[in-house]
Length: 390
Image (cartoon, rainbow, N blue to C red; front, side, top):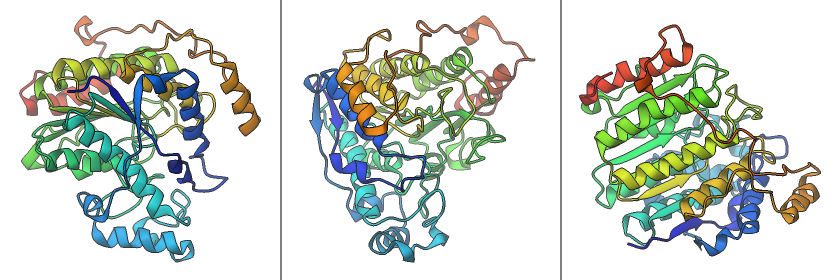
């Protein structure tokens, strides 16, 4: 197996553009790619452009009638069928929508193939992580569910156990739905509580179908959760599950919208904590999945201050050349940011909260603490179904 990491990238993915007033501004992808380059990470990874996912690949997860509806809206956006979630405020139709969505999906599928076949140990597609798309409809800024497609392709290639860990601020509902009845896939999602955030799913009681009980695990975090609570929740749930499941591949989704500056959610996580979870996922892949790691992007709407730095850290972790949090951001990149957005770019790769600290579950829990209540609810709902102590 190659020890080298792959970065999946095709400049055309920046065409995933819902329009000037939509929060998912593709500048976040372009600026991330430029920051990766500014740090010289291109020399540490193999930059690969995979082909767009074809219809047979898309059908691993999506219904044929939905794919045809996306194609029709892609040709004539005015004809978008709202019954499929297309042409809505969240998912406006735009020309070429099918092609660019399939291209993003293709990068995640290509990442999964490269890792499974041993062409790379780790593969990153920060343009991916579009985890809300359902088999028969668009949802939450997501047209095709590249994360689900990557996992489905791994199963098609012969994988028997794939673990999916989602730390986006929103519940990974589309991935959970795709594998709800499949015990070969463990889905773990840490997200803001459904009472206060879209998509209003991801309750701890959602644990998988009868044929796959305990295959879905949901940690619903109270609004306002910060670094210590977020890291405590992650380490109180994820490592034990991954250790028990022993996946052949670890697929992770790293939405940057848990950040305290994100305009669409209510957690208070720093860039430094996000980086700490990236490092933890990398370590889990090596400890339990022979290093096989597919890392995806996701949400993130502080498109200058947060997303590029968070996902550049992700690429650096995958490349084995971590960027120290206190590192100064290259001046050339800061100038490009201002030229493109008229915003001042951050000066360092940290929010000043490094090193982040948290208490492990083994230290005991406070039954009156809302964060501990969320962790305990998730453990009590899912762990016994997997033969683990809650």
